[in-house]
Length: 131
Image 1 (cartoon, rainbow, N blue to C red):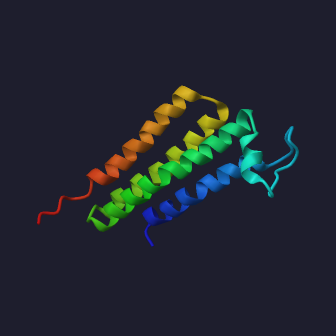
Image 2: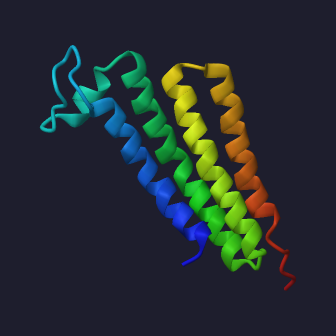
């Protein structure tokens, strides 16, 4: 399996790991309520709420990233380029999550655009196929 496909796996797991950040420890609501997880997560504030928002953003961005990697991989793009861009996307998502947790909104938005740039790059490096 290529590095790029491993990055797709990592990107798919990252939102779940980000949600763990919100769930760890005791809050003013008490410990995480696994009987009503969405209600409990919806009642959080501060950095925990931002962790939930980062998780949701990860789920939203995942399909586009996965599709771009698959298109590039099977569309004939150079494997090394696909791997590097995919690893770059994972790094960007880590920085994005840190920005979310630290409440660095402007930087977070710039980092988000960098992630979109990687996705566009993955789509653009795929050679055009003539019919």
